[in-house]
Length: 405
Ligand SMILES: *Cc1c(COP(=O)(O)O)cnc(C)c1O
Image (cartoon, rainbow, N blue to C red):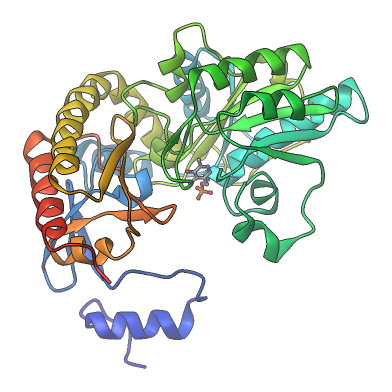
C-alpha cells in the first residue's frame, strides 16, 4: 500500500479503506475532502450540495464559524474530565434540554443507540421496581433504534435483528398507527412504549396524532413509560423543537432520546426524562466514560442556544422547499407523494429509488434512499431558497431521464 498522505488519490483512499476497514458499510463512490457550509467538497475538488448533512447531524452545515470558535476556545480550557467530577457545561446543557422539552433531567451519552439503551434501562429499571414481571417493551414495526444489542432489540426490521438473535426478550412490535394493535400489546407487564414520532430509516412515516395520544393514555394507565425517539426528528428538524410538539403543547412523553444534530458534528446524545422516570437510575446504575464531556457539551450548548432562532427559519425554508417538491409530483408520474415534516423530507416514488441516488450525486446533489422507494433528504437548517431550488432542479433533471435500471 502507498504511504498515508494527505495527497493520496481518491483511488488510493478507497483501496486502503477496503483493505483495512471492516466492510460493514456499503459506501457510495465519493471521497470527501472538505465541508463548506451546505456543500461537501470531493477529493477531485468537485462540490456537492449536501442534503444528507451527515445523516441529519450537520444541522448548522459544515465548518460553521460559531462551532469552530467554541471548539477552539473549549480546547484550551477543558476537553474531558470524566464523570468523576463536575464541570459547568453538563448542567447548563441539561437545563437547556429541559426548557426545550418540558421534561426535567438529562443523562448524557455519545450516540443515538446509547440514548436508546439508556431509555430502555430507565423503563426496565422502573418497571421492575413496580413489579418483577414488568419488563416488556412495545415498539413499532419498521422502526430504527440504532445498532447496539438493546437498540436492535427494539428495532422493528428483521434484517437488523436476525443475525444477532437471541436479543433481549419481551419486545412486542405493532404496526405504526394501528391503535387496536397497540391496545392489544400494552398491558400490566409493559415497562415502556418506544416510538419515533416520524420514523426515519423506516421511510419517513409519520405517527398519527390519534396513535400518539392513544400511546400516551395507555402508557399512563399501565404505568409504563412513554419514550419518544427524537434522534432523527428532534431538535428543530421538523420545524418544532421536538416532533411531538406537532401534537400540541399539552403532549409530553416521559422520556425523549436525542443525538444526531445535538453536537453540530461532535458525538453527543442524551436521554431527557421526567423527574420520576429519572429515579430509575440511581448512583452506579448507568454511566459513560465520554458521556457529557466538556468539549461535546460546549458545542451542544452553542447549537441549542441557536435553536430558537433556527426554528422559524426551518419552518419558512421547508415550506418553500416542500412546495417546490410537490411540483415534481405533478411533473413526474412515478413521484407519488411527499413525506415527513419540515426539513425531514421523503420523496415517495412508485418505483425503486436506489438508482436515483448515484444519478443525483453525479448531478451534484447528495441524498439517500430509505425503505426502497423513498428518497430521503435531511438538509442543514441553514439552507436558503436558492439551495432548495438547486436541489429541486437536479431532481427534476434526473427524473426527466426516466426510471433507472
Ligand atoms: C440514527 C438513529 C438512531 C441511532 O443513532 P446512532 O447515533 O447511529 O447510534 C436511533 N434512533 C433513530 C430514530 C435514528 O434515526
